Length: 93
Ligand code: FES
Image (cartoon, rainbow, N blue to C red; front, side, top):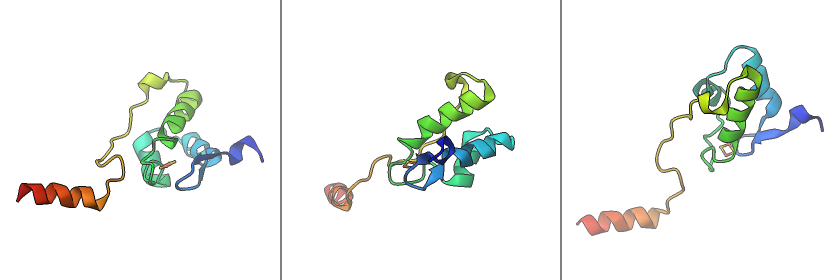
């Protein structure tokens, strides 16, 4: 297994090579990489892959990690059992 075969996003089977190829094509915006590869859209909502992709972007572009904007997150960021939502609705009645 080469370094390029490393899975960055386990939820969507995205490899380091796929991310680096996009950056090499000039796509360095994490939102655009997210849309093209679906990183951050799996069950973990990017808790694992987004920080890794931010580090790859920083390394390949020479930017500091603080300069890489964190992609927008959409709630819920954690899976919520339907019973919890149903309970919340019942309490409003
Ligand atoms: S590892 Fe990428 S969305 Fe879960």
